Image (cartoon, rainbow, N blue to C red):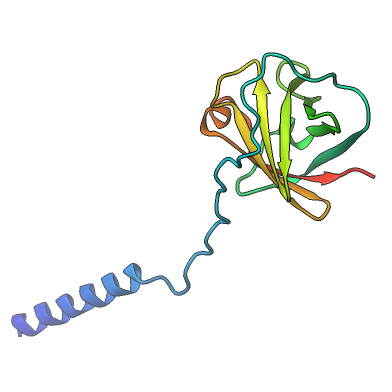
Length: 153
């Protein structure tokens, strides 16, 4: 009798383990993280003037993870001369702007932030009116957050 109870208990544990180890449905895979495109400009000591014709993109939503309040109010401005600015009106420091240069190859955009080293970059992918931004590891550790931006009218 005790042997039968042990066998039933063992079968129960095996069934429970199998149920826990096999998910009902696989988790959706996140979109692939693109490598830095060849259009990421080399480190620059000078940013082209932040003037002239430009296209603005306002924060539209998070890319993979929730973002902070300062990201939800951020805006990219891409100038036709290859300069860009990233505005954070509600940053913890009371507002701020990051600047740099960018290069575009088809639907991919490479951003190089200055003054910073070779690892301070972001990649962007254009999807219609949307611009998906993914930051390099050093940028993520500096509180930059991957997000989606929508072209402003």
